[in-house]
Image (cartoon, rainbow, N blue to C red; front, side):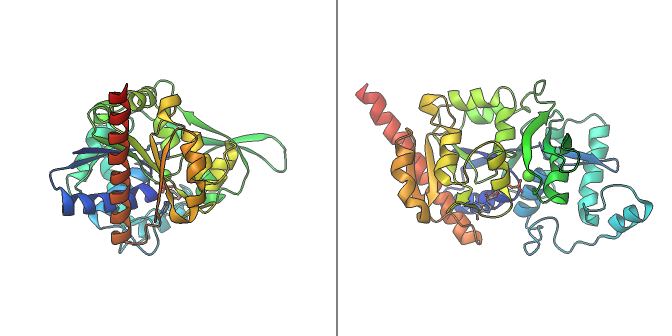
Amino acid sequence: MKITVLSGGVGGARFLRGLRGHVRATDPTSTITAIVNTGDDMWLTGLRIAPDLDSIMYTLAGENDEVRGWGRVGESERVSAELRAYGVGWPWFTLGDLDIGTHLTRTSLLGEGMPLSAVTDRLASRWDLGVRLLPATDDEVETHVVVEDGTSMQFQDMHFQEWWTKHRAALPAREFVQRGVASASPAPGVLDALATADVIVLAPSNPVVSIGTVLGIPGIRDALAAASAPVVGISPIIAGAAVRGMADACLTAIGVETSADAVAAHYGARSSGGVIDAWLVDESDAALLPGIAALGIRAAAAPLWMHDLPTSQQLAADALALAASTASGNRRETSRG
Ligand code: GDP
Ligand code: CA
């Protein structure tokens, strides 16, 4: 079976690790391809940084810092301290030394003219990831946030990372802008991974700045609409709250309520121009199922907290089961004509 996952960083990484575990235990011939958000990527102190690709790579390699929740395990920060002493870079954005090794490698390969997708392949080949990582695009698309400056009452535009990390998403966002998106195209392999998939999963990732940015690359939304595979989404919202992080601030900015059913409605049923056929919510949100079904989306409830590998693996199994029941439901409806 070919499984294609649209993913952001941390939420996507946890899900992919569970999916890999489930696949290895049940059907090792299955393949997993992740189409990963690159809207958080940026240039900093001469380095090209790709936070979501790296979060996934480190997590699948078993090299991530579980306690802190991001970056490499056993990390030191001597280089960042030097940069701070020279007054370059962002003092509130610490890069670990091992992590800088990744960014140096990426930057030097990009400088030789290698596209990001090939660079990602090269970085990933060092580890046994069990998941093919594809950046959504090789083009530089960067998410910027338009915020209202409280003192001057003027609008200010900043890189997503500055809004998220420096301001902890506390400045009310007016708009998210994907710089460079209009002229971007999907990276090699992306459209094919959607067209040839047996199952497509939207990971429990930020619907606005992770999945939303991937869907914004011209051609990806259409490929999803045209795919023959069932498309299952997993709610990143449990009981009215973003489980980890501040996704609620992003949803509020685009006028979507922080609830599992509102995010389902935001994605919309594929049968009426949206991107999902089915939607998995947490058990605590089971009361929302009839409302989601009324949108034309097959809905089910399961435990959605990814506490550890077993819970992430079970979530992957539940998502694939929902996909299978969606596919057989579609077949029945088609044969009934
Ligand atoms: P980022 O790029 O690092 O922000 O990561 P993603 O976009 O992939 O995912 C971030 C979102 O994942 C958070 O806003 C949460 O809503 C969601 N998330 C994180 N952990 C869990 C979890 O255990 N279960 C579920 N259902 N969602 C989660
Ligand atoms: Ca991210």
